[in-house]
Length: 141
Image 1: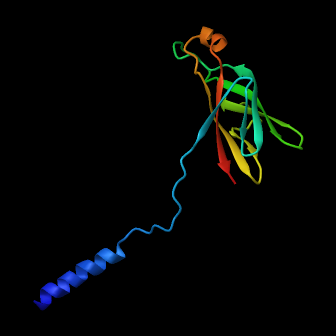
Image 2: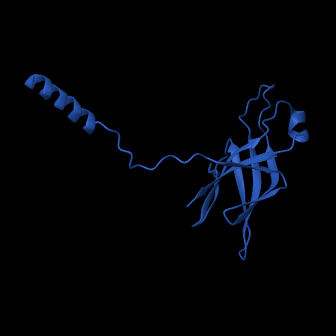
């Protein structure tokens, strides 16, 4: 009987000390905001405008290309009472002296990160006819 009690005590003790630590914060899911070309959205006290597509040299999925290609876009960020800031974001191949950084705005309140530009072209015709959409993720700071 003493052996059974000792074994039971050992199992209970091992189980109690093997519990997962739940003190760490939970991962917050990403919430993505869609911005159509020419549209302005409001988030965390800031206005974000998808101004223009500067370049779209991404290879259509139906073609074979030598170069990887990229899309460069311009966005404008405004906060009431402050000067507007314009930033260029590059998705895809960067050239010398360019940095691949999709975080286009950071303040004490928020961090804004470009996720991708859609649609990805299937043909050259798609680049001109389909409306562009920028996907942005806003993180609280």
